[in-house]
Structure formats: C-alpha cells, structure tokens
Amino acid sequence: MIISITKQKQIKELAGELSLLELAETSQDLLLIITEHPDYKKLSYQPELTIGDGITALVFLMWAINNETNGNITTKNKELPQEETGIILYS
Image 1 (cartoon, rainbow, N blue to C red):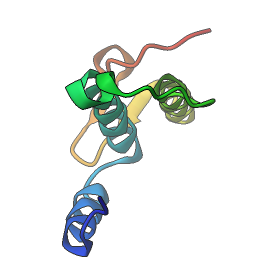
Image 2: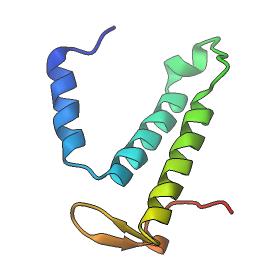
Image 3: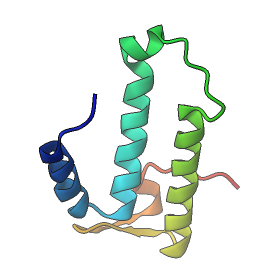
C-alpha cells in the first residue's frame, strides 16, 4: 500500500511544525508502535538491518542534538533541560 499524496502532504506539514528532536522522538515512537503491531509480529521478517537498528540510530541522533545544544534541547515551544528530555544518553 502506498501512502496517498494527500497523506504525504499532511505528514510533511506536521513535520514542518516540529523541531529535529521532536521528529526523532516521534520517529522512535512510531518504530516502537510498529514492533508491537499484531501484523508485524506475525511476519517472518528478518532483515539485515532491523527496526532496533533504526531506534539505535535515532538515539544517537538525539544524543548528537543534545551535544550540539550543550544539554539544553530547544524545541519550537521552549527549552528543555537534559533531565526533562527523556533521552537516554550512553557514554
């Protein structure tokens, strides 16, 4: 199934209202939702790169955003101190 042009436009409009951090967080949430979907669980799907790899890449992206902002994540609405972002950082 291909996403309709209308749906693509809606997604792009929503994405334009989000910061990079919010996009990464939303993407991570969507990937987790996919892994919990009953139809996904029924698949015999074993690719070389997994959804877990995608989630890991998003964690590293959020870490890089955090480093660039010196611990203060800027969203379009407010600045969030690191402890309120919910980002798990690995050192």
